[in-house]
Length: 309
Image 1 (tube, rainbow, N blue to C red):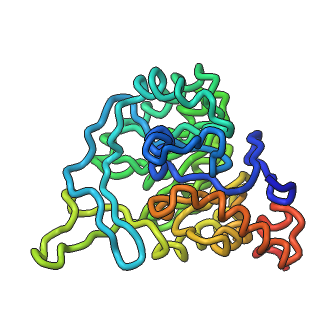
Image 2 (tube, rainbow, N blue to C red):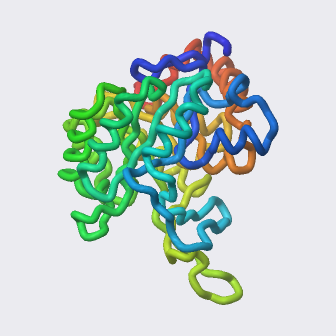
C-alpha cells in the first residue's frame, strides 16, 4: 500500500485506514465461497471477527434481516459458538492472516468481559480486544450494559485487569449522552473508542403489516445512520484523548474521508461489505486520490481536520 495511506491504531501498524466492522465479514467463510486467496490479498487493514461470548448463543428467532430504503435491519442476537470454539478452531485457521486481528467479545454479565479477555490474553494471534457492550445485561434487567456509564466503566475495568492487549470499547448510539459513555470507558482503561453500533429500529412486513423481524426490533445500519455516526465521532474525538474507530453508514471513499476529518483514526466498513466483500481495497485507493486532491500528504494530517480553525 502506498505510503500516504499508512497509519496506526495505537500499537497496530496499518497499511491503510479501512477495517471491517465485527459481524459483517466472515473471512473463513468468504475465503471458501469466493474461492479467492483472501489471506494473501486481504482487503481490510485489520480484521475483526464476529463477536463471541463465554457460552454459545443460538441468537434470535428468524427472520433476522430486513432491507430498508437506506440500510439494513438486523436481529442476529450475537449468535456464535462461544469463545472456546473461537480459540480452538478459528484462531488456528487465522494464523496466516497478514493484518492485525481484533477479537470482539460480549457478555450477559459484566464480569464476562474480564473472563473472555483473560482467555484471549493467552492467544498470541490476538492483537487487540474489542468490547461489544450493546449486549443485554442480566444485571440491568435486560438493558444493554452500554447504556449505563457505571456498568460500562466496570466492564472495561474487568477487561483491562485481564489483558495487556490494546483495548477497544464499542459504544451504542441508543443513549442520551454518548460522550458520558466514552468518558466512562476511558476511565475504566480503554485505549480506544469505537462508534457507532447500530441504531434501534423496526419494520413491518408490507403485506402482513406485522413485525418483519422475528425479534420484532433490530439494529439499523447502512447509509441512513451516517449523520448519527459522524456526530458521535466528532463529539467523542473532542471529549477523550484516545483514538476513535468510526463506523456507521460508510460506503464510499468520500464517507471515509469525512469520518477521518471528523476525528476517526480508522474507519470500519459494515453493511456495504455485504454487497461487495472486497470493497475496502477499492475504497483505500479512491481515498488516496481524494486526499491528494485536497492536499493531504498523510492520514495523520487528515484526522480531526474538521476540528481545526
